[in-house]
Image 1 (tube, rainbow, N blue to C red):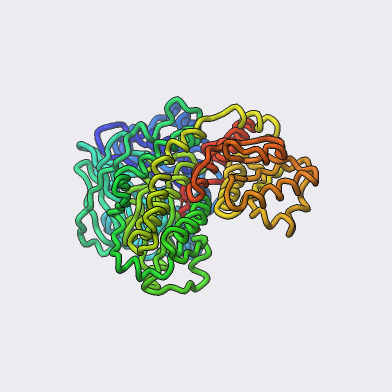
Image 2: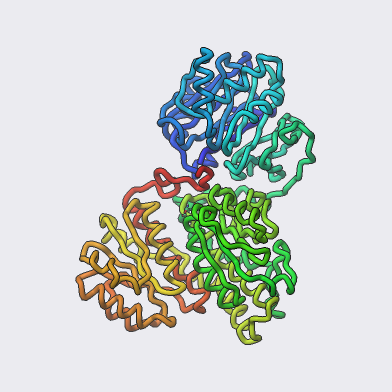
Length: 614
Ligand code: AGP
């Protein structure tokens, strides 16, 4: 998704903005640009297609000098990837510049009307429409805030905007409509920052304000003035971000994804920290308030999520149904609102989203709200939209996840669901003392178990050498490990671009077994659980047809060892927590194959870290 950075203060705006955009590269983009209120007056822009170093070169050749500016990394929605379509876009008289995240759904008819009035367009984008609109309102006498306010009444769709104007050099104006990518405002000393994501400003300040849906703000060196769309002043809510700047850095790792796989023991420790009294066997989730009566009245939980988060939710279903005895449905965020879901006041809709900004998941939350459900969220980003609109939430506490391919958010979100299941099970009286004791004990050992598989081993690179040129992979799992087969396949396809499919192993004989040949490696997840013998049988069926099997087995396994061609070993873990451990070798395998193929691991083609457009 598009990245936005803005700055007003004593420093060189172009360099602050460019550094901020580099912190947002993981969001995925195909072009970039910066606009500055130039010291010689007027607005000057530099734009470039491709990676940020192209823009940096352009700036080196022809610097922008000024203390007020903004920049943008564009993930193309309307208009091809060209310099003309890169943001910022400026109005016909070069008095206003804008950067934009989201979609102006009615831009075509607006553009037609403007072209009929003789306004010249230089791009194919929807964004350029609002640059001309705001400029025309300012030409009619509005100030920048007034012109933006009036322009917002004309457009449809979800958008986040940042504007600068040569007529008002001491302020930046920003506005948000709907759930399009967030806007975070960072408060410094005599300087103020704007960004679409926290990592862009973390090195400057941790004191932030989040712009909510249908809000505008004037940003000055002194701070921020917040308004609703009727220009009524609002009291800003200040947040202190708990992340340290180092956490958002790669450090000695080659890729963010490599770092984030390796730091999962610490991330999971942080997820559990302060939430479990291991002596009294009590789980405390203060940000998700619910009484015992309310817990007992709960009839159903519907988990809504996308991508990797959806697969985490499939695991959470097992945890919540097993420990809290609550029926759980799991829906894709992009599907939920189209199926007219059956919801009662005793239904909880739980959004599971690392970014807290995934527009399909946010839309599913709104569907739940409209139908009267209790809204919960499990999120990683403090202050994200999903966290703010939920009645209760649980932070993953994984630290910033920069790599587009989600890893530590996946494992910590499963742990959060386990904590929620224990909390609800305790309140509903569905947990025997022994079950609670064993469940809490399993949690206490989890970081150590994860630590046993969190390092990057030679086996992953040996397998990458063997299989990095294969065109198809099949991942098989059963029960609570079927979602891990889905996640393992997604990891491989999204960073190595090899087609991979996760499948319930029991379904093999209903079709996929026709695919088996020596060219398609089959990853079989076979911990010694209740379906181990069934997995053994599936492995034999694959081998009988000349397939190659990579068996994921628990330490001490002997039977799969005799049948599989290659082994990935994990420590023995309690069945409900085993998915947290079992996924890690599959994360490493995908990483090793992607690196072996020379793929762009942290910024895979066509992908974005947070999908804020439908
Ligand atoms: C996972 O590796 C992908 N990056 C993607 O599927 C992601 O999980 C999905 O877009 C949901 O994102 P969210 O958790 O921020 O809502």
